[in-house]
Image (cartoon, rainbow, N blue to C red; front, side, top):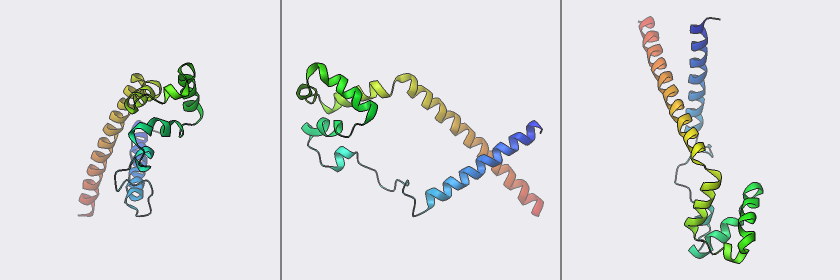
Amino acid sequence: MTHAAIRKLVADSVATALEAQATTMASTNNLNRNSVPRKTPVARNNCAKKNKVKFAINTLTEEALFWWNSFAQPIGLKEACKITWSEFKRLLIKKYCPQTEIKKMEEAITMTQKLIKQVQKHNSVQETNNHKMKA
């Protein structure tokens, strides 16, 4: 298989995937569609500011719950629950979103955007060529 054939195969596959995604996102039955901004569980439950941390820790599972228990144990649960919502979010971000991971995600997004632009350009050229062939 030639390099050009492989490139065309990849471009066609990506184009098909993008079309499928566009169809899915346009579907009225699509539960992933974000037609309105979503509230966090804390906001949905009209949680008072002083209770946000208590509510949030009750939604933690597995590794995050283990992390919280490790954090709270030395100072006691009562004291741990007194931290501010901002501090709680900062601690979670520090633990689960290290700068190296954020950088990797940003790079992946940039590469994906470049690939999408290439596919769109390819599809535009392909449509132009198809239109010329029909004429």
